Image 1 (cartoon, rainbow, N blue to C red):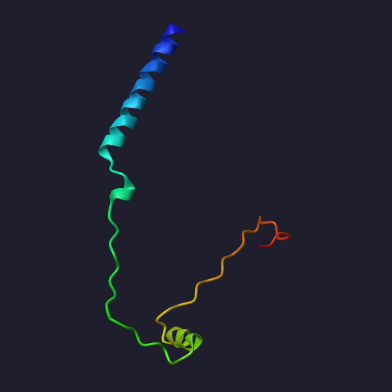
Image 2 (image 1 turned 180 degrees about the vertical axis):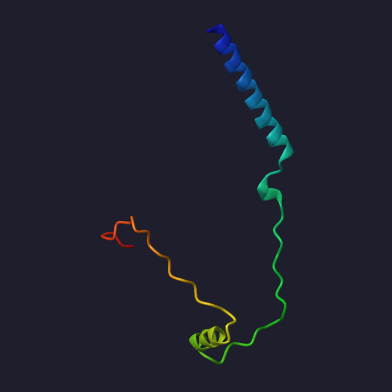
Length: 82
């Protein structure tokens, strides 16, 4: 029983030492300054076309592709829908 207690205290001290070392090595995440995103241009021209028309044209030119619908597994419960 004493051997078990000695082993447990050894592991506890190791864990406490590693936690203390991590606290001293790693700076707080809030102290890191955030980079401000700069705009490339002063202003942007608004689109004259409908958004759906633009997306459809990009799809027709094969610049983007529609994602495939997810397949349900055969073992799924089809009585439940989300």
